[in-house]
Amino acid sequence: LRMNRSIQAEGSFANVKEDMNFRRYLYKGSENVLAQSTLLAIAFDINKLHHKIMSERTGTHLFELKKVS
View 1 (cartoon, rainbow, N blue to C red):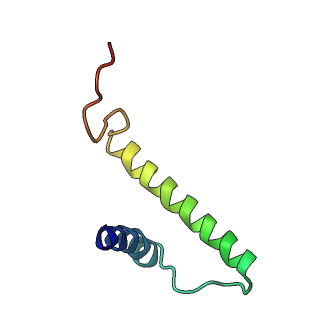
View 2: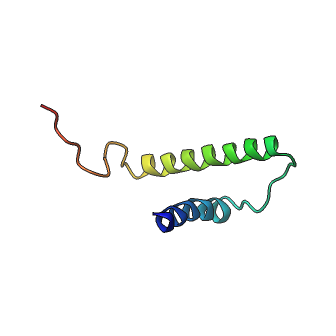
């Protein structure tokens, strides 16, 4: 389980570093770093949503939904 978590976290952080050219935090202090990290996470999610909209995959699900009777 620990190995799986480490791979998942590294994948998204690598995308932020490479695709968004993020190299270092611009401000000092834990509050500023948290704010910048939050903005990066929001930007990453918006970018994912944009690519999903452009490839017309917004109505699809990863797995089939179960029917509730």
